[in-house]
Length: 145
Image (cartoon, rainbow, N blue to C red):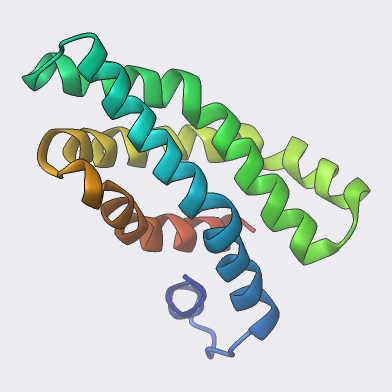
């Protein structure tokens, strides 16, 4: 994300080891485990409801976008800001300033990505697919930061 951001802004790319570490920790401690749990829960829930095909995809999409996305966006912004600023006060200020815009952009990207994910990707590969899409999402977060 940082490389693409520097190219988009016409600035030379400089490796920011702290930023790489923060995003690495985020993926390892936050996104990876939460997404694995969430996609598994969605699969179990839709199976218990005997949903298949498009009904299953729409149910997963509705649960994902309505129940999961707002909290996950908050956790993402909060974690990344706190790790980068080491200040709870600055983190809260930044979350207040950026949450709504990031959530709106999140919906624009992830409704399409999640629909493809839930409709076409086997559940065991859904986290991998999401991580692939997240490269673009992380670029947006870098630009928004």
